[in-house]
Length: 211
Length: 211
DNA sequence: GTATGATTTAAACGTATGTTTGAATCAGGT
DNA sequence: ACCTGATTCAAACATACGTTTAAATCATAC
Image: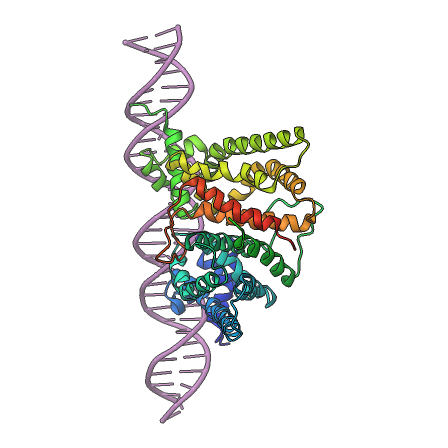
């Protein structure tokens, strides 16, 4: 009974448990149990727990960033051909929409969202370095595009507002279940498209605020 | 050579290390070493590692929330006497300013900010429950006040925008050191007062955005 | 000075962890 | 059928952890 998908099963189980409980509290034994795989399989296929975490990140972040970058470049080309500058909302959408849409592609991707939220909350963690390595080209391009769409902002103000925006986004990514205090008359369930618009209303207004 | 401040030294060392490395990766041995205290002192004075975390949170969160609540109540009284409603910016300031001002009171408080940022990033963590217990009365009052200052918003929209705002704030709390990608011409250093205003510009505009 | 309770200390305990090992099993080619 | 390299497996390894223990030390009151 061979199982050629051992690596993928480990990746999915690790993604799930890292996202739910965090990297350190999750043991290799709980991962291999959930993946119905021998304990030694992780070290055999990935080398170490830390390398497994890298692989988990890489598996989803690479394609996601490809999509985000492609959408951003397409927007910049389109507006340039028309002799216009892109709006802040359009630029942010190229980043935010592919992110939150991971929720639609099954629960695995949803786990990944929560995991990234955790990584962003651990500035000195092992994952931050490799995460930032993946993000750097996209972030630079995004910053460029936002500067184009908000020419009246100083570079410093722009940087901080991008920082604030990413803070909000990482917060949403983490909390697909309620952990905030929710007034009893508020329904927290929401289709992804509506959430994207709700977020873009907020973030665009914040980015475009008059000082 | 008695050391009646053993408990406080443990609390400060734990606050520092929990904030820097996270709860799980931090060992009692590293805490007691940094506090120059015997290993068994933690279990003697606090009972367990988890109870120590609770004590760390309690020590600073209680006075902080007292200040935040007092400022909020003062604002609400003042505006009510004047027959006005508070502005969204004023309401948010009562929460944000005491928070970020912890940076001014020495490095210990700064550590606490980062720790809270971590707690908010771990929805199922042991600390979230006791943190939320401390926050609930204040959050309810804050939500009330924001609803007063933004009467045209639906409860649901208001909730989500508060959620976004707290996401931004927790992100700042975590990252007093640079971990985002910073363009080389941007100076990230900033006085606390300026940061408060920069954040309130962003958050107020986001909260008040026309849908 | 001595007795008493609180605190500190060094050492050990039991357990859980990431990793390694070496034999067993599998798949594919000749 | 047999060899070969890749993969799986149960077991063990070394280490680090949170916690407990019991003796030693301290502070305080009589």
